[in-house]
Image (cartoon, rainbow, N blue to C red):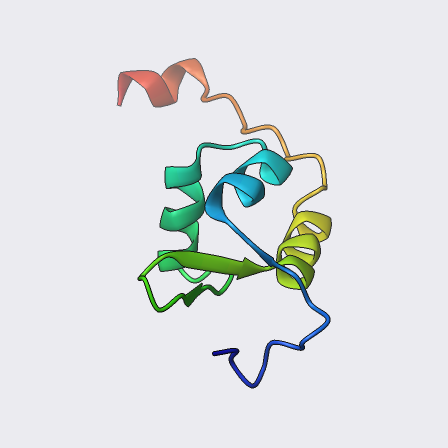
Length: 79
């Protein structure tokens, strides 16, 4: 059964396929889906599947270079 908001021409990806695209562990993919970073559906067997279009949009939105964290000043380390 396909969710109404998932178009028929939109491919569904396995956690391993998403992990390869995002270059993370499959468990991280599951954790991010549980945190709401992107959606997932469950197959009748209980396996997760991810919308390829949604993952591509997530990838495009996170493709920016992360800003470096400011280094704490020596006085802040003593506090």
